[in-house]
Amino acid sequence: MAFILTFLLRRIAQGVVVVFLVSFLIFTLLRIIPGDPVRMMLGANVSEVVLEQKAAELGLRDPIYEQYGRYIVEIFQGDFGQSYLLGESGGAAPTAQSKQGGRITEEGERKREESLKTQRAHVIKLIGDGLPYTLQLAGLGLLFTLLVAVPLGIAGGLKPEKWQDKIAFFSSSLFVSLPNFWLALVLILLISTRANLLPAIGYKGFSYTILPAIVLAVELAPIIIRGLSVAIAGNLQQGFVDGGRMRGLPWRQIVWRHIIRNSSIPMLNLFGVQIGGLLLGGVFVTEYIFDYPGVGKLTIQAVLQRDFPIIQGIAILAAGTLVLVNIMVDLIATYIDRRLKY
Figure (spheres, one colour):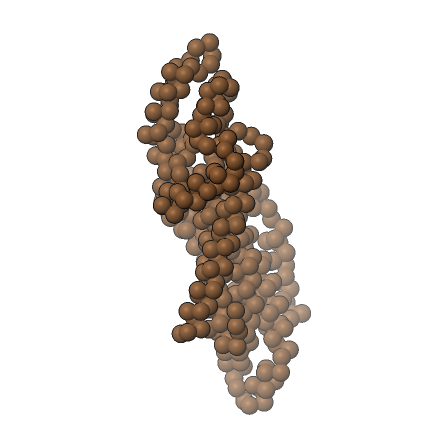
């Protein structure tokens, strides 16, 4: 118990540092790359005077360290800010504006700002609305991945150079060569449009999650197939296998209690280091392709619209998720092999 508490405290402290560094990096990059979010908010016809006034109100013209300091204080108060462009429903925030000669007047901007203050959505609400859909997609995609990849990986690892190994290698090679955007379009065309078996675009029920989950599973499966087959094939060459046979242990017991158990350690590390990041990235792209209303689609829309508060909030969420996944992986690995010390 003392080891677990020490381990958790140390890893949580490291995770806080990682999340802090990621948030600062994203915060800084958003403000030094070209493009002005204020112009996205106010439109192309806004005057420079009004634009600069609005930027000053938002604090976007202050030094970066001052902006970041305010942001961190707000986060500790539970406020991740408000979206620049999205309303409470997730659509564009309604505006009230007056124009004169094609340009926004100061009176129009004042009315517009009053409207935006009451209608702009809080980042935490937008993320909270999309997170259940993303978790559902990620969970189903991971389930599909394990159902396909684990049997192929185990069979290929236990039968190296045999037809099982060749099928595992061919499957992983095929899956890794299929771009997710291309596969998504093919599935939409064949399964949804022509065969009319499954819905594809948007979300009106659980069935809308199946095609995106298949795309995600195809993206994740090659890593597990190859990693598991290589780990099992390597453990087959270890001395404990021959020792178990000499003691008369059943082959099934050797496989499940020793070979696969020992092979699970590198697989867990692979999951923590690569699968977590790939899962987040794959979910984001897949959601956008299928117009799936999760955090991934929200992220890409925010990037395209330069909606800083949403990007920053999701970056912190993603970094925190990866930290938690790695902590859980290390805890499970320590439980499997007590010799490990992290």
